Length: 285
Ligand SMILES: [Zn+2]
Image (cartoon, rainbow, N blue to C red; front, side, top):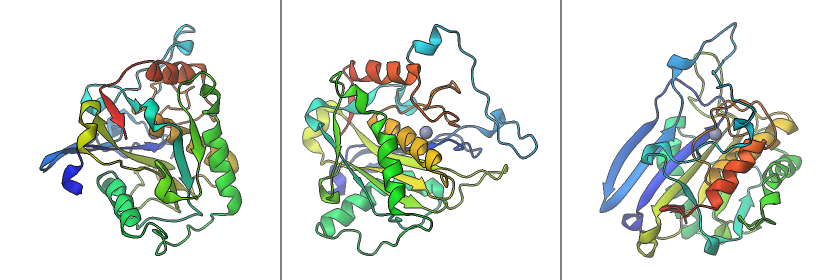
């Protein structure tokens, strides 16, 4: 079924995702077009000071604080991507601390969606029997993850989208895994990634040619060792899973690349409203 995948594999990682690598975008032809990218920052903009890893954020006017930033996908000219109404409610499965096989961080965007898809297809009743639990994961970790995702609940009553949690990974559109640390994700400043979201996107007019592909979120139990961090990291990654592909250029937003705030800002809220009030050519499916 792989040749039927017509879409783009995209990944965003939470905060500290600037490892000096430019955004990657590689084309892969498998009968149809399949693209992959890793969303990263550029090291040239970073000023390491006393071991701190600093990324310049833009200063915004008071007016801009309540205006949306552009959530579009940089690799397709900032075109917007979101879920369609008929995908609602988006079903989320939070694994019991499971770790996907460790691969270098760069390889996650290319591989995760297909890997999880195949695992579920091969053994729908117990797809992740071979996976082990991430160090430092506890039951309460999953409460923190769910609490982070709940930050997006308020938009349900506005009719933007709906989501819910499922116990069955085979039913899920968004699956959440864990790791202790991401391999090769440390930069010169000694930073490590807190999370990464990998999704495939599809042209809306080609959905009849494809099968549904899960969105995969992975969260670090080490970088997010405090409950507030896990919760905020989860909220940030779920923002990507909803379709905020580009990061906010502003430090005060949850979707800033080196996230420093823990909650949705007025601009984050304006952005998700803008996204879900717009018809998009590309969708997650
Ligand atoms: Zn991010």
